[in-house]
Image (cartoon, rainbow, N blue to C red):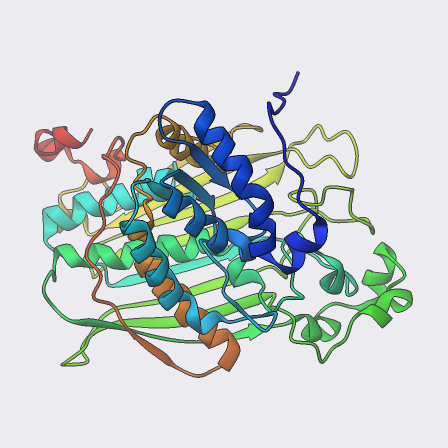
Length: 438
């Protein structure tokens, strides 16, 4: 039987939707009572609609509670519409509040303990960067979440909404922005004292674009779209569905380029949805078909590529049976005669069964470390660089083409211990040199 709560508190829907501070007035006494009941520090998981994260976090920080917050850390709003250009400053302000309190605060993201992104990609890069003393010169990431929204749903959804002016960037993309940002920060081990800047430019697609991107005949197979179009205002500032950007990490004074890259965060991609109305609980039951590719290169010497996809199992019971399995394929290319690796090309395939996907396992590991009071490697301070990158991308979305430049003088973060290395990076003659990493 599923676990049941010992205590509950109900918050009026209008407060949850329109006034996080009013919602907090219902929850704060409840938290205080729970803190007085038990010994030790109260631990609070904040998994609300992200517009309310900041209010709940500030309260918990001032009260001295430990917190674990689901991504994104915060979604700043102004006059009821997303204010993406204030993400970085609001994050800094929140961190100042946290540093004045006693609690420990972490953010739950999938990349920091991920079986592919952390244990196979980032770990291989760390070893090769140390071996060769070479920086990361290229990062390319594209993720496709396979979300298919019908026109009227943009105005109705409260779960992962678009009607408040934010979309893909503040929905599932934070995980991948965090991954790219941390890969860029790895270059601090080569250039610890240099002043760096990041230049970002890109383009977006919005709900109003989808009428030209998806054929009406196919949409009508799912639902009678013309009947519902009255609830969709093409002039309303809905959040974006897709973001594609390029960037350059540069030395600020010389303008020399250290690392080039791209990041594609897209929802309008192949999925599993073949029905009209959502089930009652739409989260993760809306026909998503995830696919993510990450490719990172160390100049002319070494590269590693990860391809992660979630596919339905073959024994589905019905169209709406969304059980699936995770498959990860990691490919390394190496100038073997220079790097000392075993092969010029190597490939590893890993499959995770239904119910224990890479993302679930990674987030569970982080959650367990937080519960146990261990280091999560995802404390809020470590997300400041990601907040800066997210802020820049949000401004790119709003400008739809303007180049945004930000300072990128963030220190290299702490990393989880390396617990796995592919044989691709260890040749027979050098195996003993890297035994400490295995």
